[in-house]
View 1 (cartoon, one colour):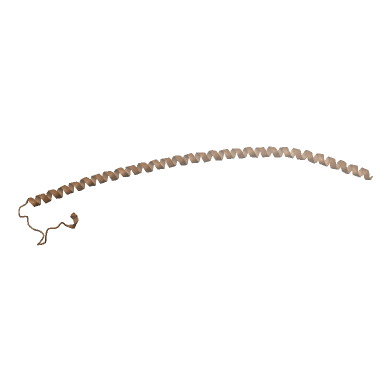
View 2 (cartoon, helix red, strand yellow):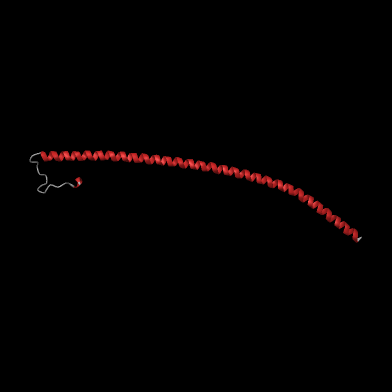
Amino acid sequence: MTSSIWFAACAALAAGLVLGFWLARRGHGAMHARLAEAERELAAQSARAADAARAQQAKAAKDLQDATAALQARAAQATASHRAEIERLTLHLSQACDEVDRLRAAAARQPGAPDTGQGFPATMPLGDL
């Protein structure tokens, strides 16, 4: 009786091992399939994210290039405008100096021009300095 119990226990143990091994192998294949699917999904998501990052980087580079070009154009326009204003003011100043010289020469040619200095020596007003 003892040997039949031992035999039954060993047979049950062997059957359990075989059944456990079979279930583990069956689950192992399903796990590998799920793992492979997860890896494919992860690779696809990674590729989409990389594509999106490249597109954003290209857009940012183009925006930066456009902003730089616009800034350079505005700087060139401001420089040209400044240069034109300086030339206009230089011409105006030279014309004013010529007019002052002409008026001084005309005043020096007048005989007996009245002295407006009220007894003080003739000096240049501070505005002419």
